[in-house]
Image (cartoon, rainbow, N blue to C red; front, side, top):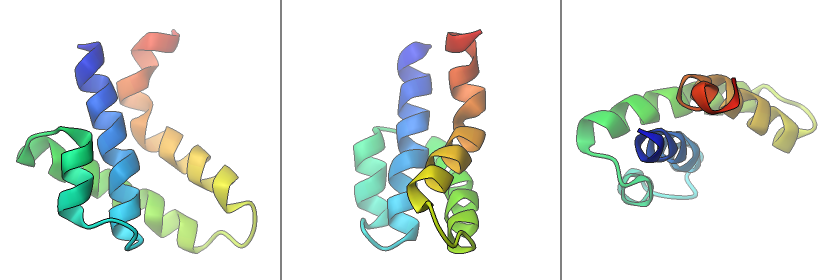
Length: 81
């Protein structure tokens, strides 16, 4: 279960870079190790992160981490409770 949560989190992380054009969608999928269906969920979550980053005027890394955290919370929450 931990491996799956890490892969899903990495999928969202990598997919943000696909949304910004730094990676292709296929490269992000390969980095995550997710199957097509799970990666599409990660890709949709990453779209939310990328959208929020576009409106950030400063501290983009901080905003990136905060918004990424919001999207992967469901995967990581069980490890930090």
